[in-house]
Length: 513
Ligand code: ATP
Image (cartoon, helix red, strand yellow):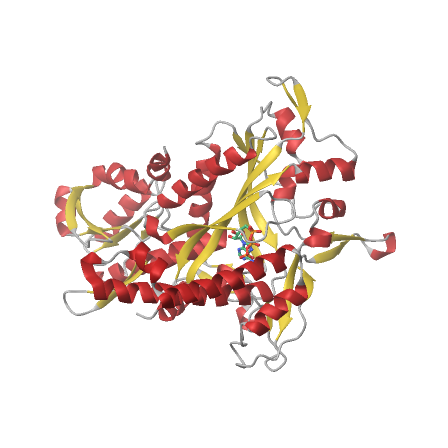
């Protein structure tokens, strides 16, 4: 299957089976805003639970909060978002389409990388066993040419970003002959800065209203509560505060489904450490977070770190965890060493001390912060992409199956009476009523058993049980495994433990230790 086809299929599968709908679809939708359907919300909640439990249960020095979306407007002055939360934009004069200048250049660099990889792949096939990849990369003239071209563009790109040199960015686009994917022309406007924050008015106009922002990140809600939590929770540095919640960005390049949305959800942790220890903790959290991703079993080769070209205004180290999406390696999570920038800024703007007295060091200081910030929606997309499969069966039919990790699946067990008579539905409901307290079950008696299996495969239900006439005599049911399609008879009494053990979040968390 073509890569782009896979992505299209995931998008239409998401809609067909109630995972993701376009927002306000009956009004033709709202750009880059999506709703989660009956299956999607369960999967999303399970992803959030996996993250939340992994943070708050697995580390004894991490606690959670839930701060409001609206915050005092000075928060965003202090954090730098009012002045510096900008994207460089460029428009194509023919198609009138707007792009992020940095994204256009990054895509161009990725194309050169692709050319290099293709050369290496070709050579690998040609030389077979005796192929020395390192040597080939360093000596093959064509690869060396591509590499040099890439390095030169890359150096200019880094410099332009770091100097906020908008004309420099534009010149790279011109020099690299980057064309608009829609019109195919290179007729570009100037590059301009655009602030990504949404704003609204709070309070009625007669009393005078205040301009407030919809938060573009969760982090500031944690920073302004840093001392509240530290004091009331008697926390000692190093410690972490987590929260999950909505964030809003007026994204310009809003495409690729739920990868880039205007309203999305983040799961963030701010970890407070003594000054000078932040880079060690940065490395620590890089490893911990990668372990969390790997535990899902999607294959270590599908993840990579990508260090930032341009540090945000608050960071002294930053990397992304990228996952191999159907459209290439893309950021799912950011890990940033944010220094003491945010707390120091809040101290300055609020006039309140944001310091911690360290009893071991016997002094007060503003802690440094290492942040891990992961998008729920991007994580959701990566889980779908990793799980979606089309398989040819022995009887010639194809089945679409979501091989979701059982702990994340919206429904854990489908309970299917073989026929709708002879007391089988009653027996099936009896099982449902005893198991529904343990995990998410789904009762289905419509259509042939084959069709019912297909429906459960398509939503990723890891187990189905069928209740047949024999069940009434021996209290045994047939359990069918989604991935292997193997069936075995087991006793009804054993279902709770046999299935429960495999679908329980605990079994995923245990992989982290
Ligand atoms: P990008 O470079 O793709 O715009 P970012 O570096 O601005 O992302 P961060 O500010 O580090 O993103 O946000 C942390 C996480 O929040 C990202 O790793 C991503 O998973 C998620 N995220 C950010 N912007 C969006 C968005 N518009 N839609 C969905 N998720 C997002």
